[in-house]
Length: 546
Image (cartoon, rainbow, N blue to C red; front, side, top):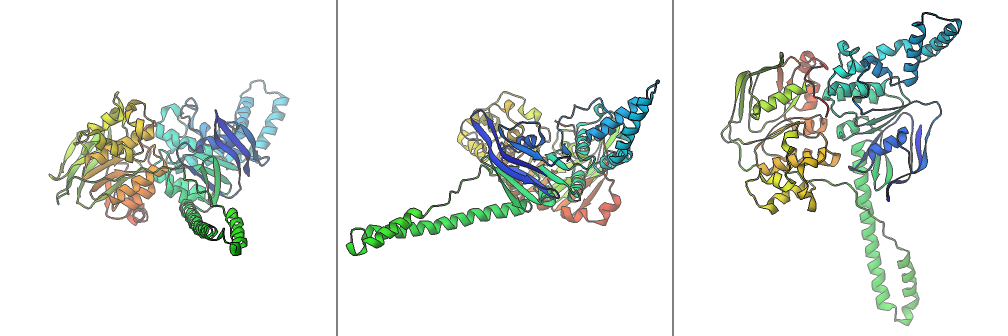
């Protein structure tokens, strides 16, 4: 068990947390949620001991081992992958290194023999002989093939390092597991594996994630951070949402009844306070009025953008024809004879572990890259707007936000453009910020503003939820569901894929594809997917971590 007792953290004059009291017990998985800036990651650092609170204390059951997902992808560059994972259990790794050092001695003494014997006993008690096989199981489950298990970390891609550091956190059955955005940069297959791992994990888990489906799948409780307090709810994310909304409705209804009673009492007092025969009743009602207290309903600190993609024109029957597209990069065949035809009602999710292949296809279809073979043709009534995974080039200038967005608008009126920015929570002076200094989430919201103002009837989106908070992801999800045009998209957010797509195209590791008109969940359960799909194949073109 781990608990926070009267924990307060002040940053200058501002209290990020104040007198927080909460217990996290064994056998439960807690989803830590809250608006951007609420302090989710900060609270995890306080729990882990990486950050000291201003007052209060963190208590951990004596003898229990805590594991915290590391975010520094370069910290272990000089270590082999296997060593990096086993370091997740620091004491076990220390024993292994000390043993190796003793056995490597040329002048092995009796004292060395005694010490080695002690270490061997402790090593056996910690299941040390199973360490490498356990580490390999974690790595394989997350999609790191055996050939990479003894490579140096510096020789791997950013996406592979993310998975290895996650394996490090999971290694050795920690008593308390703290995970800060563990699904970031994981493909949907690896996320599914992690879900099953956590569902079957018997100890305490505290996780921060913007993935609603993930939280629904793994969480037994939700810890909601709002205005410096943490409120605990039993159940998953959807249950928290319904419970919190119900609580607000009940408080509003109770206040409405109290307000009606207050009005009734005030009218009686006003009418009869001067009437001698009614004075006692009026006095009694004054006392009753003083006792009525309205419940304080404090608005949430969460802010939801408004995302609404409205095409300027309808699409005709001819949409997109792709014939035999192939692409080889640096000697590796990324796309191999890709062919499909889209109809005007298609909303297609491109899935699969080879993210570089999906990005390459989107670049070709948006005109940013030429195929080696094959062709594609858009219908004459189509207009496309593209959301790239890497938006660095878009913001490599000194434009302010308003000017940056105006260049993509047919209507050059500043008020019109600011309306789109306002929907995406850029208010007031935000419009004169330079785009170069925006945060990752702000840049994504700018890109979504660009898509909205374009009026395109075809949207191509490559991982649009990266850097977004849960409120923005929810708004995007709703906007995509309502969009009347054609969608081609990839996303690690299971719920967006399931609720938006009516067709699934999986790009396989060898560059070929599977094409099914179905929902994502139905596709995952299909026999064809299980039969044809290569599970968790690493690729040298896997996405580099930012």
